[in-house]
Image (tube, rainbow, N blue to C red; front, top):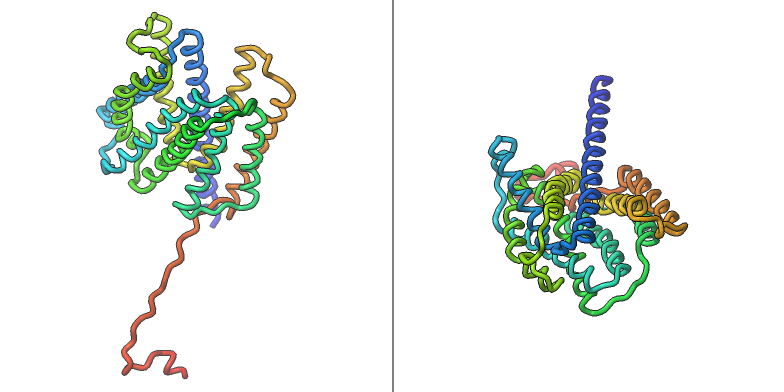
Length: 338
């Protein structure tokens, strides 16, 4: 018994180490790409977010082709209907988020982003029959409260802004749910799923991106004044995006969309802190620090509560046992006992 317990303990330690590494990889690449994109857009005026995302997926596609050529990605199957469905959700998410940011106040945009957690919970409850314990639910509410205190300021909304936010939230939640669902259903690794979906996303976003960006900014991406520094930041953004896309698939594949959203708000906290360090401390005040503290406590609580037995688990559907038909002429065991 002792060797078996030791092997289980070693396996748990290895899993925890890989989980921590996956989260660290996602946080570093996500925060890095936010800082780089902020510099690219604010300092160098490259405001073509949708086209830039298309470039990100084109670079990711080249990476998957290269790894496949080296033999690190094995051949796998994913129906075209599933690929197109996933890309549809993903592209609506990207465009919806950009439009929501343009049409809504920053406060309502942040509220919309926070609403992804309850939407993701709803999808898991309805589609996967997942059940949450009371502590898990309360920890999620604490995270939402803390991040809201940090980020939500002025809140104003209009009809078209609300519609854009609604589409953005639901398409993002569905896209993240589908990452976990497709990896589980078709036994796909993160690289495999990226290899199936990234080329379609790159093609569609590079074709539609310039039109969407012109509609949003009234500027043409081909008329932008490309300099050596702006090109350097574009290439750097695309390089970091490979890690961002891969780490997102790894994290959602290992966990779920809800856990990814909850712990993902740690990136919001880090971005705020880095913003204060690099871009001035005028926004740093007591209520922001208070909100950060609440959010971090909620994240730690969620990690502990969801890992407990019954904290967050998929409830199997009830099995219906059909009664066997017995020949009326042959007595059953019950008949014999009676």
